[in-house]
Length: 253
Image (cartoon, one colour):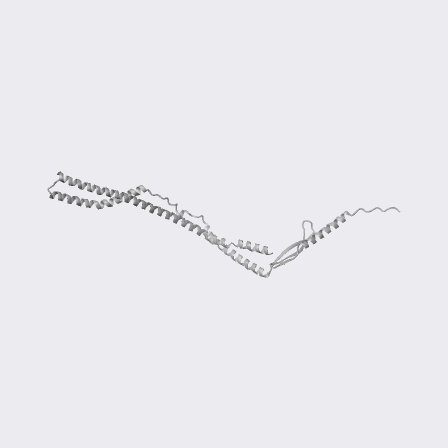
C-alpha cells in the first residue's frame, strides 16, 4: 500500500481561532477593569449595549460609566445647583442695568481739565503793597493837612510870614516829619504786602489743590458708578460656583 500524503496546515483557521481567543481575552480584561465601585459618596457602575461599528460593520460592545451620588450628597448637590441657577438668573437680569451704565463711552470732558496753578507773586505783592500804602496815606493825609493848617495859624499869630527865616525853618521841619511818616508808611506797606502776598499764595495753592482733588473724586465716583452693576454681577459669578461644585463632585467620585 502506498503512503498517504499529509494535508497542509490550516493557517487561516488557526488565525481565526487565535483572533477569537484574543477578542475573548480582551473582553475578559475589559470586564475585569470595570468593576462596580461603592464609597460613602456614592457609586460607579458600568453598562453595556451592542452597537454597530461603522468601520468593521460588526456589532461591538459599547461601555457606559454611570455615577450616582449618595442621597445626602445628592440633596446637597441639588440644592447647590438650584442656588447656582438662581444666581445665574439674577446675573442675567442685571444686563439691562449694565447696558445703561456702561453702554455709552465714558465722558470725562464733563469734569473739565486739570486746573493749573497760576500765581504771580510779584504782581500780587505789588498790589498788596499799594493797597496797604493807600490805607496808610488815607489816615495820614487828613492828619498832616490839619497839622499844617494849625502850624500856619501859629506862625501867623507870631507875626511870621512865608519867606521869613523862622517861618521857613518851621515849615521845613514840618515837611521833614511829614516825609518821615510817609516813608514809614511805605516801609510798613512793603512788609504788609509781602505778608499778604504769601498768604494769598497759600490760599490760592490750597484752592487749586482742593479743586483738582474734587475733580479727581468726582471722576472716581463716576467710574465706580459706571462699573457698580458689573461688579455686583461679577460677585455672584455662577461659573465659579459651578466649577467649585464640579471639582468637589469629581473628587468625591
